[in-house]
Amino acid sequence: MKPSLSLRRRARMLLSLSFVAVAVAACGPLAPQRQATVDRMYVLYCGEAHIPDISPWSPGVDVGKPFDFSDNCYLIRHGDDWMIWDTGFADALVDAPDGVAGARGMRARRTRTLASQLAEIDVSPTQVRYMVFSHTHGDHVGNSRLFPTATVYMQEPEYDAAFGPEPERYGFVPSTYETLRANPIVKLHGDFDVFGDGSVRILSTPGHTPGHQSLLVRLPKSGAVVLSGDAAHFTENFVARRAPGFNFDVDQTRRSMDRLATIVEAEHARLWINHDRAQSLTIAHAPAFVE
Ligand SMILES: [Zn+2]
Image (cartoon, rainbow, N blue to C red):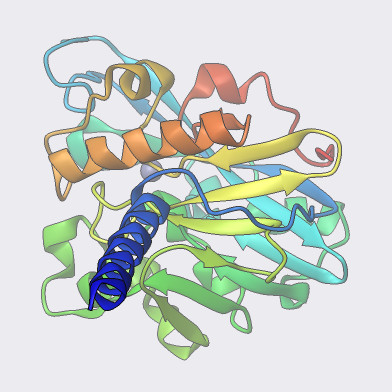
């Protein structure tokens, strides 16, 4: 009888070990995978915003301090495929040189269209096979209509919020993304390996919105880069784990920042924070690209 007891104990141990492995994979570093890379990535100017008082984004500090946000889009080439991550403020903003008023006193503007930057590097919107948004706010989905044939990867909670009965509750403006209904949309439940070779991985980082996501991109010469989305809006907030009070879930946002920090460290990656203008000014924009 003793051997069978011991077997049962070993089985129990194995079960508990596999449970731990799953838990680590879900909240800690990524599971080991092939280290394929994309070919290149273009960082595109996708608008900018002036904010008279940044403190709603950094509760407890920066009261009355004006701030300027960058807004970038990222175009990734993988073999013959192209993928765009975020589409920025709508190109129509170029017709309003003084900018357009947004939430919390924000004034948004665009001095160049996304379409013109794609033309400059000779990429047609129909060549873009995948369109993925960090989330569904207007400064990220503004040009979603430019890519009607692209397949969209969206977390199911984000999809439900955007296309459910109360999109305004999450700060979503349906007119900025309504044409997505006609795109092929794949709903995700967590991380996703876009090309199946580990070169581009969508990271589930909810909190700013219900299905917010970030992106891990492996480049052949520069190594890994993590694109933050709005998990944090600028570096100081990421370091201090400060989350805007208007986020969908502040505690969840902090956990997502912790998760990104763990991944950045494990992957020896750089973290590019989309709205951090000071950092954005240090990154070459299209027609230049990073490899
Ligand atoms: Zn944003």
